[in-house]
Image (cartoon, rainbow, N blue to C red; front, side, top):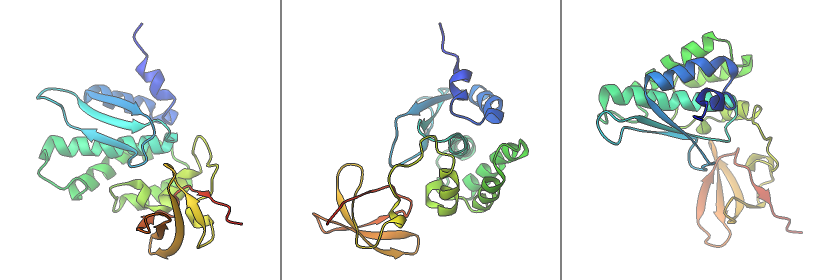
Length: 207
């Protein structure tokens, strides 16, 4: 028996977006892949491997429905820009920003986003970034709708000077905030790294 792709999508999307997203996937001949969690990206777009082949979009499986939809449209904008410009423009340049904003409009018309998220998302789309995760206001708003609420504190919630562990086991010392990110030192290598205030961390008890 062939899998019911629409029903699979239903588990990841807001219900009001299901028909539109499914139709887009079919019409654009998109090969959609739902992946394991990736710490460096929420999704990505790949052109066809050969002329006439399928466009490829992958999305992380752990995104909440609103974030899944926004990320899908983000990657769909890359697809639309690629069809017109190939690789002749900047990946997140004005062409992509305009396409992303235009492609989001039908979903605003469906009134599927909560009012607060609608307001923050429209503001973000005025000058969208390469990753929605770099917009702290949008990230905070989206976190409210996560499927599995966070179990660990975020970096901005722990005191300066705290020792904390990230995925992979490396230990860092929380330093000062530089505009939008925290400057933190790796305990072993003594090298400095920048972290998002919303990075989930595990605090080490140093008592």
